Image (tube, rainbow, N blue to C red; front, side, top):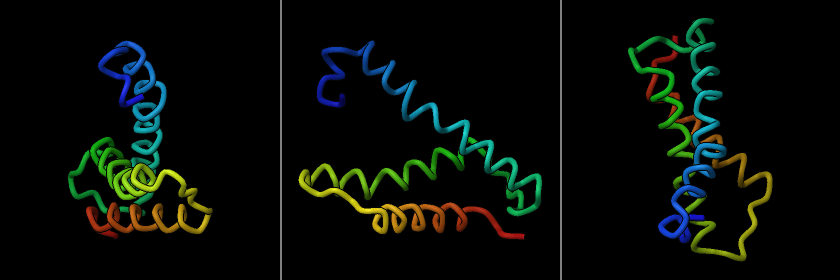
Amino acid sequence: MVAEAPRFPGLAKTFYDAGPASILPVIAEAVNRALQKHELADNGCEPLRLATDFITVLRGQSQMYCLLHPDFIPDQNIIAEWVSEAVDILLNQVSLP
């Protein structure tokens, strides 16, 4: 999709809106619920910003590795490591109560 985005910008936007952008409100709502339950301390960061940061971190290493190693297929343990690392980074952005 990335390679074809300049030729098919409408399709690229539809793909982004239906995929990557659609998960942000879901994660933001989970962050918001954690704030309301006092599972996370409110340090003034907007839940949508935290969700965006989380996805950016999660996608960064895993996507780069997979793009540069096209035959690599991550197993559940590697995926769990990537998610755990992203969660740790997210939690470092907010103070735990």
